[in-house]
Image 1 (cartoon, rainbow, N blue to C red):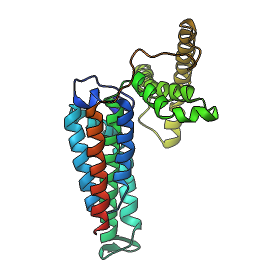
Image 2 (cartoon, rainbow, N blue to C red; image 1 turned 90 degrees about the vertical axis):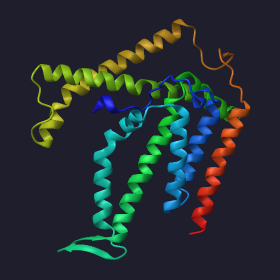
Image 3 (tube, helix red, strand yellow; image 1 turned 60 degrees about the vertical axis):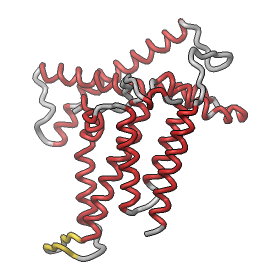
Image 4 (cartoon, rainbow, N blue to C red; image 1 turned 60 degrees about the horizontal axis):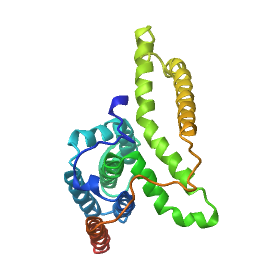
Length: 267
């Protein structure tokens, strides 16, 4: 299951989306979230689905990668959908047994919620799929640069966010190795009561924390050896420059947002 989590991973593929300015891709992601949550109609989901499909084709990311980003949260989706299905009592009652009932509004809300979360995860995952951690750091720092006037540590904040994203796949891989090692020693992680499973996680969490602190110390030492002193006077190997491709992408994204809001208002 841990191998299916793709948060923070970058997939180097030659595509239009990979070549776009990372600052624009962050703006696209924000606009996509606005688009997805701008209304509660089927048209909002339809526009969001069309946008995700377009981005998926332009990015050339395999569909199985998108499925891998959804697979780990399937239990949460199912549990949340069941809660909405059983506790929302709006609309016509379709089935009832004692105090449990399923209504038309509950089914509609459950389906709508699942579709919205799936589209949200797939769409936002494209940001890290198509942008390397270094470019993502530079883009975040560039977008937050106006905050430097109030002495906000923009560079340090962008660096921490980038490192956090970069270390998610590393820690997941480390967790999988530790769990495999504990199972090889006879540890039972998938059986027993809930309390027994929680206690079985202790031999995994302790070495995981030790490994995380060791990696953090190694990273800090490596940055100090390279004379890293923060963002003051720091230059970049690759300068971010917007092109016509980025502005066309922004225009298309704005059209999708406008279409979503307009269709929602017409309902």
